[in-house]
Amino acid sequence: MPQPNELTTTDTHWFVHDRFGLFIHWGIYSVAARHEWVKSRERIPDEQYERYFKHFDPDLFDPTMWAREAKNAGMKYFVVTTKHHDGFCLWDSALTDYKATNTPARRDLLKPMVEAFRAEGFKVGFYHSLIDWHHPEFPVDGYHPMRDNLAFREAQKGRDVRKYAPYLHGQARELLTRFGKIDVLWYDFSYSQMDWGWAKGKGKDDWQSEKLLAMTRELQPGIIVNDRLEIGGDIKTPEQYQPVGWLEAGGKRVVWEACQTLNGSWGYDRDNLDWKSVDMLVKMLIDSVSKGGNVLLNVGPTARGEFDSKAVARLRGIGEWMKLHSRSIYGCTASEFTPPPDCRYTQNGNRLYLHLLSWPFGHVHLPGLANRVECAQLLKDGSEIKILAIDPHQQAQNTRMGGLAQDTLTLALPVQRPDVTVPVIELFLKE
Ligand code: GLC
Image (cartoon, rainbow, N blue to C red; front, side):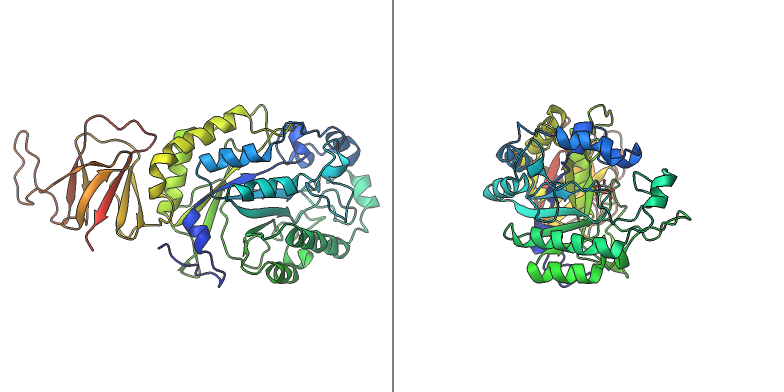
């Protein structure tokens, strides 16, 4: 079994078992279709941003279809933006008018999503922005869309984050009480290290993080909370990079989840050209599990409520690989063995999975595994891969390879690379 969490006492077994989740960033920024930070990046005042609110009409929204695409890709849990930094809410919050029910959508968009994903067997996660660029008491800082408008800053300098915090807590309470069991809460984010001179960043004192976390755990016992409240949490959340190894805190391995995009943007970004290939995405998943981590892979649905064709193509490509190889992902974790170059290991008990990121000619040599393997199979079809016993003292001669280190196991590979995104060899270790 994968390692238990060493960072907190929360039970994360399901989480480290499942390994692969879907992140969804959806809101009125999907209408702008230029990244979910568009309001800040382009310094758009409320009056202009309003056009996205007035014209958000997701007539093609079909959460069952989303859930099925995600399930087919091998994902097991999902995390959706209930509110992003622009303050827009997908659910029918009693605490604001700035919500889906008041757009042309005319309905709560969160509830049917939760129900559809649950019906497909998914665990449910909520992303909730700590930041709010719409709330009138949220003090203007260096990320705020109005940061360069000196007159606005002056007129709004009386804003008080202590008046914003009850709103933040009140909405979290709604999310934690109205939608049944919530498995993950993904708060985003703290930045108290920032100092723009005229304004400071915000963090745990502003959010009243201790209180917010206590309420979260009280309302949803067993919930997994991320690490962005600035007071620790159950999981670490590296964003848009692959860690070099198992993440640690205080010298101990922790539960972690890399959140990754399909193209560098979280929200739908129509003209984006940075799409990752299926090959790269599958390798990122393998890489994370080989280092003891999860992947939360994002889709930014369109303003009409669809996963666009490029996202679907990638999810389906991943799904094709997962259909034959999910055994090397679910329930797996880092291996104690060191893989040869261009390879990654994952392990589940006595099953060791060798992922060949490039396909070598003829042989692959596995240090430390001599006499440890009962049987080796290509995972895609269960066909035997021959184990060669090479005398370590054997002299190289013409067509005969020389002996290798005593502890090295050699596998004989077919010349033709198996026709899958990443070939995997399943090694059954001797007990
Ligand atoms: C960041 C960004 C954001 C995105 C998130 C996902 O903190 O502000 O737009 O939602 O991370 O990890």
